[in-house]
Image (tube, rainbow, N blue to C red; front, side, top):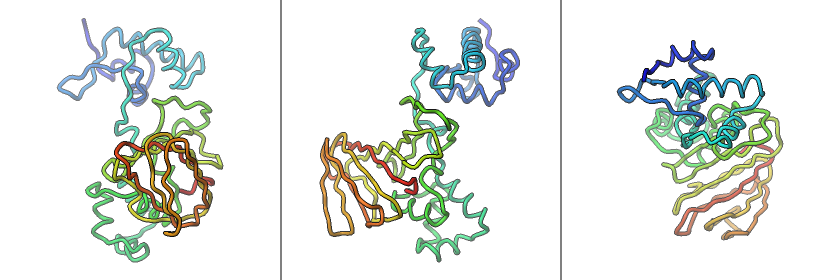
Length: 267
């Protein structure tokens, strides 16, 4: 059985190589690899790609709809993992924000109170960053959490399949955040938080807006203005104004899963 390179397949199917990579990232197919790097496509892969192209261009389906259709037809689709295509490059984005504003590390250090060494290590992905610190830098650069999600290419999509969620992880993967919407022009920011035991915000932070939490699994300890302490368990909900300094931590023995909604999206 013959195999074909990505360039050959792009010409045969009539789509760009970047489109082929995107379809692979979205779990629509998984070509073989030569020496662990170069993609090799079989004739069956090519037939599948032609079907995907038809569903996108003739039927007008988005990629989530294409995957759903293929699954309904019994296609053996690969599992979708949170790869680099789904996980934001936080350090690279922070470095871009700084250089676009013609700021030095010393400038950012002076204005935020964070050390030059720490900022440098975060920008080069050599140091972890907590949720509270990321939020502080986001406010400093006049961005919100959504900026740090990679490739918001599902704008306008009302339905987001579970495998299509954008994923952001911080603090050595102690906290995982999954974006539950694909429309950027909204007034709510619903996110699914998964916090490992011992993980948390690693400090207090505050900002404009309001927040609503609904506890799905595990438990979460929440402090508001260092005066109010709540321990949320499954089924509990909590509402508060974001201007209250807040910090949180999973003080339990298993993952805490929370539906967390911010409004406006200025987290």
